[in-house]
Image (cartoon, rainbow, N blue to C red):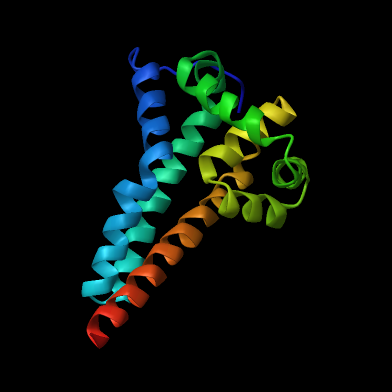
Length: 166
């Protein structure tokens, strides 16, 4: 995979903007509805449905960032995430995440993606290494979907049980 500009009919900035909006609001747009549904409905079905949606979104976003790095990195959306990463990198957690993402270990990469975000892991991976991520690195980035959806499902389950006890 080479470092090529996105060729999506001139809509690279729109795609990048949608990815950043998702990155900033996924807890509200996906997380809160998952928690509410898990509190009132079958949490297993909610978890499976939400994981399917979030995995699909993360795979598409991460593949786009990796393939269209020059458009992403030079645009305002990529710059916005880079500014946020610049604040986090010097911290202890930021240094650890950077080491894990830059390492050759897919398990460490998946763990860093689960704890930070798939979009952040791929952006940081491209930024740190300066080269495209190998194709086998993108699927582990969806570990964030399982972690975040699991947390919101569990929160909804606990809230539903607490409300049911009242």
